[in-house]
Amino acid sequence: MSSRTVLLILAAAMAAILILSDRPWGLTSSPRIDEIAVLPDDPRLAQLRRDIQWGDSLYPYMTARAQAEATRSPPKLKFGWTYREWNILGMPFAAHAESGFAAFLEMRGGTRLALLDEEGRALIEEVTGRDPAAGYAFGWYRHLWGWLIVLGLALWQIRSSLEIRRAKALTEESEQGE
Image 1: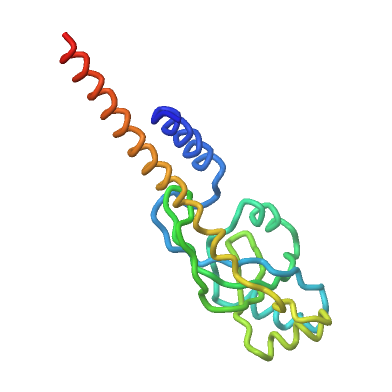
Image 2: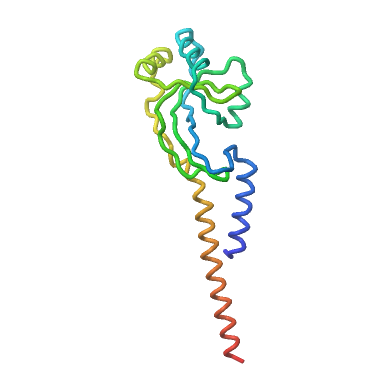
């Protein structure tokens, strides 16, 4: 594979990322929520819903899918894991746990949430009949694919310098043969 082919693949990948990614283009460290379950519309969760709707915890970032769902009235109450993601140019480079489990609503202005203590998790377990966090493991590795572009650039640099050396060696051979 020539260095030009690698560069062409990288350019196509960057164009696709810039067009399709719903992440910000600048260097950011954004709090996010990994959705684990949609909670039932149960009266026992009404107080939790009110606390979230009128509380002051807001993540302004929302995915395109969440923005489309936010027009729904009323929004669905969900359960998830909070994490922080570092990204640049629409690509994630790292993620780590933020504050733990939370109940949240995706609304027009962003994602409103309430962090859950043992009492809140017990209430959700009572309502759903199971612990929605059972067996959950945060997939931090899904937030590293931005490094593939960096590796592609390194591959391009290596291929390019090898091609330059070969061309230089051929030029020297042809000059010596004259």
